[in-house]
Image 1 (cartoon, rainbow, N blue to C red):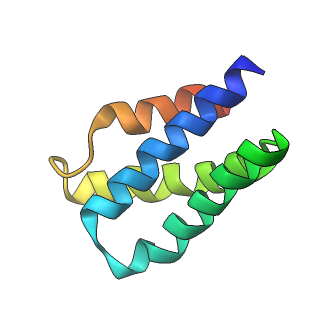
Image 2: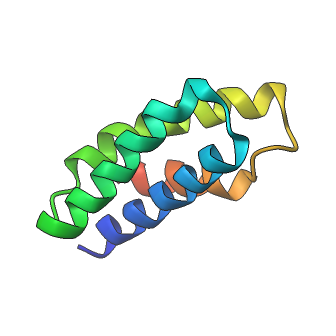
Length: 85
């Protein structure tokens, strides 16, 4: 249960990064993540968070390689840490 909350919080951090970046390519992923966060808050089922959190992790890690200063490493580290369990 506790880990699911951490996944949720890491996903919230990811949506904030996508919002700050303002890149159209990420809009759909950002809205899916936001939907999954709301859904999790309602039913406590983390499957959507895990699915889209994993996609967000790949996208952010890849974006950070080209733009090291635009993504806080902690956001990526948190996603990695909590999605592994």
